[in-house]
Length: 495
Image 1 (cartoon, one colour):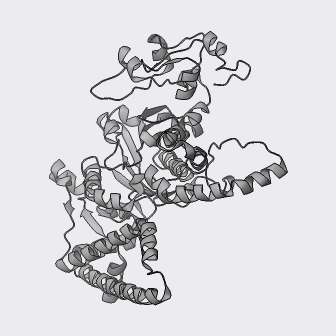
Image 2 (cartoon, rainbow, N blue to C red):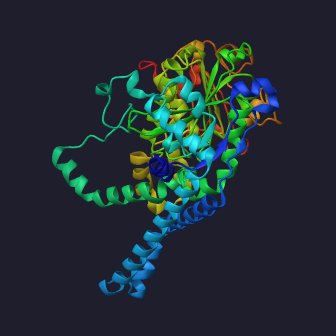
Image 3 (cartoon, helix red, strand yellow):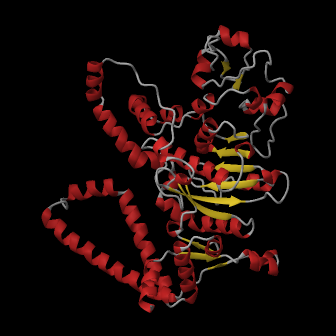
C-alpha cells in the first residue's frame, strides 16, 4: 500500500495552492475563503527546482535548435565520432534526472497534505461525482491531470463534422483547367512547403506568443495569483472541456445569476494573442455584475493543442456548447466579448450562432493579411499571402459579413473621432460601445431608408475616394452613393 502511494506521488502533478472550501468560508466570513500556497518539504522543493530548470533549459534549446544545429555543423560536431560521446552524456543526464524525480516522489509521499490531495484526485478520476469535484476544486495543480468535465461529443454527433472540426470560411479557389492545375501545383510546391514550415515553426509563435512555454513560465506567478483571486474572491469554477479535435480547453466560470438582473446574462470572454483568462478581460464584465465564462486559447496555460484558426474555432464551439448544455444559458442570453485577436473566435461564434445576444469587439482587426503585409518585404508578398490564407486566415470581417442580416441585430463599428464627437465614447475607459440599430438611427449615424451597413477595408476606401487620409475618419454612405460607387449590388442584396 505504501509503495503504491509512493508511485502515485511520483507520477502525480505539481501542486501549487490549496483553496479553502466554500462551506468553511461561510462559517469564517469572507476573509476565510482565502487559501494558502502549498508548502513542500525541503526534499520536494529542491528536487522540483532542479527538474524545473531542466525543463526550462530543454525548452530554450528546443526553440534555439535551428541556430544550435547550424553552429554544431560548422564546428564539425555533427559526425559519428562526436555524436557517440554526446549521446552518452545525454543518457547520463537523463538517468540523473530520473533519480531526482524519484526523490521528489519520496518527498511528496512524506507530505501528508500532498497525500490527501493525491487520494482525492484518484477518487475523482474513478468516480467523477459533484461532491468529489467540489473537493478537487480546492486544489490548484497541473491542469493536464484534471479530469474532463464536459466533452463536445456529449451533445453533438462526430459524424456530422469533417476531420478538422467545425466549419470555417475558406478562401475561394481559383478556377483552372485540369492540366493547368497540375502544372501550377508543381510550380508552387516549394512555396507550399516553405509556408507550412513557417506557419508551424515561428509563425504561430509570433502570432500567438502566449503559446510559448518560456513566456508562460515567466508569467506563472501572475497567472496563479489571478486564478486564486477568481476562485477565492469571485467563487469561480474551473472546468476542463474536450473539443471535437481532442484538445482540452481550460475554462473559468463565475456564476452571478443569484446576484441581480445582469447576472442572467453570460459574457464569454475571448482573450488576445498573449492573454489568459486569469489576468485578461474577464474583470470588465465581472465589475458589471454579469456571469462570465473565460477560456484559454489552445496551447495557452492549461489548454492543450496549438492555436491555429481551426483549433480556435473548435475550442470556441465547445465553450458555447458547455454554456448552453451544462451551465443552462440560452443563446439569446449570451454575449461575446473579445479583445484583439480574440475577435476571430468571437466573430466566428456570432456567425455560427446568430441567436447570440450581442458581440463586443475591443481593439480587434478585420483581417490579418494587411497587417502581415505591412511588416514584411514586398518581395515576400506571395509567400506571406499564401501562408496567412492557408494556415492563419483570421478573417474576422468576412465572418461578420456572413452573419444572417437582421435589422434588429445590426451593429456598426465606429472610428475614434466619430465616436467621441457623438458622445458615444469614454476617453478614460478607452473602450468602444456596440450600438444597436435604434441607437444608431437616433444618433444620426444611419440612413433608415437605406437600411444597410458596409465595412470597407482601408485600401478600398482610399481607392474609392471615400476616405480622407489627413482626417483619418470614415464617411457614412447613403444608399444612392454606395450604389453609385459600385459598392453595393442591388440584385444580390449583399454587402
